[in-house]
Length: 80
Image (cartoon, rainbow, N blue to C red):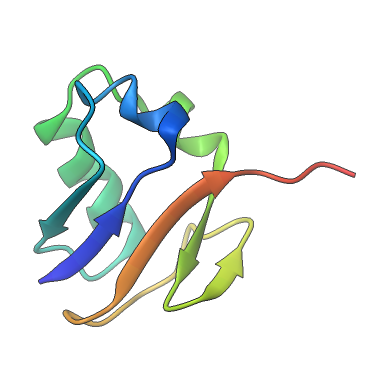
């Protein structure tokens, strides 16, 4: 299962949960699983964040896939 690490901002919506495992292997399935697990974590809130998949930062991850041993790190989106 892929490992998810949330930014401190997102932890406000997960009662402080920082790390956990997910069964998803696509970004869309990941968002669905996150919303089921943490109802306060809406798609709009998630959409304000980029994700690093195995160290590669992706600003718009809508169609991204990952492996069951991947590390997924949500970070605040960088605007410039």
